[in-house]
Length: 275
Image (cartoon, rainbow, N blue to C red; front, side, top):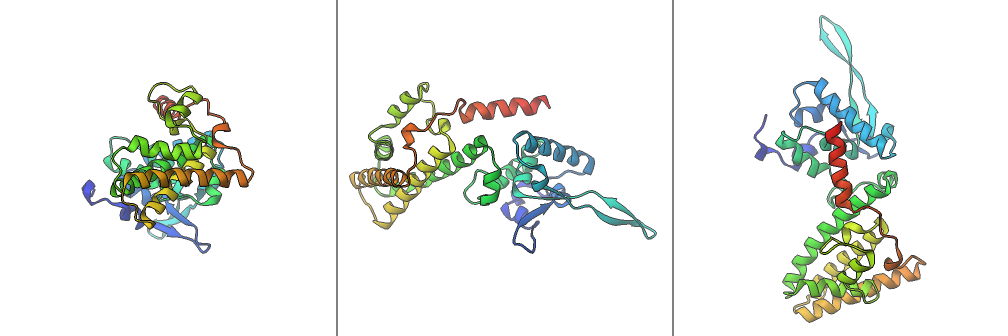
């Protein structure tokens, strides 16, 4: 096996295939080698767990795990059927999630195949197949990445008081509400993350605010904290007006999910341990 530092995103890109319709996929047998599973029997057990996880979320297993069995020579001209699968990125993600956590390459695979990353955005069709909670995880990770980039842009624009900066954006989008106001309205505990307690629609509205503010700060070459805060507030209001004009629900009127994403994550880990 290669040393872990020799594994990069390119490792997984190198075994990616694209069919005649431009759809990307990975062969399970090739992924097995990269994930350092010596025996197909053990790797197939991981695949079965991933398929079960797929079914439990209400997503069609057949779309993500496509049979790709083939005949292989075993000597003297004899052949036998070899089980294989064509895997979507989401299937690979589920396999990585159910892989042996002791294998360091597994964590790299989880990052690469994560449904919730900006670089590996899932297709519109795949997104539509996700449950509401999966959409929340996906959008939450995009907002996390987006906020990191926004903070970098804000820092370059001269922002030092980041709480004030972010509250300006929230106040624009939420009709004057600060992050604390939003948390109180949602009935959250002290310092509980408000983004972890939003539905996918509310998260998407915030993602739009985040990405557009970052772009405006850079485009307008904002160079002081006041202008940066004013810009964030203005973009928040623009997004709010866009929702209103589209006949959408105002973000403060959207329902708060019964469970936070951290709670769901904890329950998922406990469920996997019991399997």
